[in-house]
Image (cartoon, rainbow, N blue to C red; front, side, top):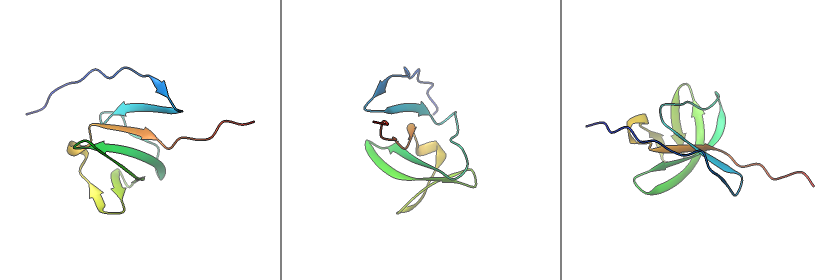
Length: 72
């Protein structure tokens, strides 16, 4: 069963979370939340991939671009 969730675009610690309906750029480093756990990985060939392998898009609730440090 699919449930639509409205996610506010809040910036906190340089991270802006998005739903899985949106897609990152190709080969972008990302953080992804699945089952209450945050994984780091990349978005390759329209797939969410981390060190453990592919995480199915239907299992991704939120993803974020990899944070970049502010310029001093």
